[in-house]
Image 1: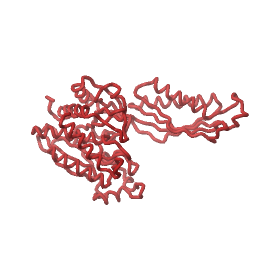
Image 2: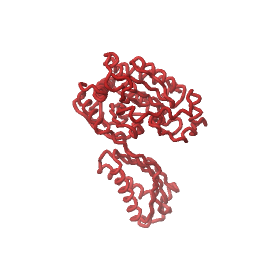
Image 3: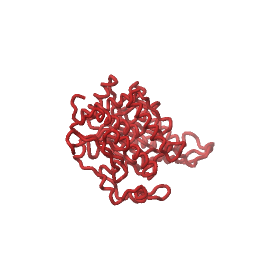
Amino acid sequence: MSPAAERVMVRADALAAISETPDALTRVYLSTQHLQANQLVGEWMRQAGMTVWQDSVGNICGRYEGAQEGAQAVLLGSHLDTVRNAGRYDGMLGVLTAIEVVDSLHQQGVHLAQAIEIVGFGDEEGTRFGITLLGSRGLTGTWPQGWLETCDAQGISVAQAMVQAGLDPARVALAARHQDDFSACLELHIEQGPCLEQEGLALGVVEAINGARRLNCRFTGEAGHAGTVPMHHRKDALAAAAEWMVLIENTTRQQGGNRVATVGELRCLPGAVNVIPGEVALSLDIRGPQDAPLDALLAELLAQAQAIAARRGLSFSAEEFYRIAATPCDVRLQRLLGDAAESVQGRSLSLPSGAGHDTIALAERWPVGMLFVRCRGGVSHHPAESVMAEDVALAIEAFGRAVKKLAGDETA
């Protein structure tokens, strides 16, 4: 194992020990544990030769100066908060590998044309307050004013939590960075899926963070006696929903393009063993790396549902309650990361991210790129989340090459 990879694994364990519960990793925004993690990560940043500060929304930040003081910077980083009962690499791996990239430069006494900044974002998951990307939206200056009044399960508002953490809610805007502060943003993250493992690769390059649409759908037919209504007279809402669910799976699979569709909730009324279901409510979640094909898929699926309902003498309705646009990664940065991945593992693989990341917010201001690292079984948001030290070593090497080339060392 390389010393850098070994250090990352040990430090991931150290961060995992900073948890509000001893038997399950949980670390939420502005908690005592969040501030402890910031302090520890800040110390590691200092050891790597960085100037360190905590910004006005609770992100831990470090800067490794360029050859000329005050130079534009490349931004690296990920998040330090977790879901409840989390794994130890989601978010943290990106911060720790970025520190190793800077530490390597520091040990060699090398300063690049651009500076390097690392941010450990305070809240990507939204576990405490139910709102996500608080840390990265602090950097982009896109905090809605209403966020300060949002309360957690104990009735503590974001503003109150900030005061308890030693932060001033009136100074949130000071976390915002200028457009020209950064030339680009790179995030390294575990894949949280099985594709790299299936391909036998340690690293992959993200083409886009998937857009998503979520809908509440409903088939309405006619309830009736399960024993007395003949089959050809029935208006069975569940049978219609079942037919549509199979079509959703088949249509999405046939279209490809890394699009996915899921029916995750299903509720039948009246819900009795001896009654034909008269109404079925079901959810639809569809995601993909490009908005136009995703919207075309949604239109096709809804048309199929209407056709099924009409043929069966039922009605169908759908209401969209959530929509987020796809976030494409910068093409130049994809090539840069792809070349770096190919140099350490022989080939590169492009794939979408089905999960959200701080990069979504950062992409509104700066070019973004993401490098994925294989995780065992594709398991994430779970204590079984696992990466191999050998993959981490390759990730540090590839990420370092990309950062050095981006920041001005053309020989990298």
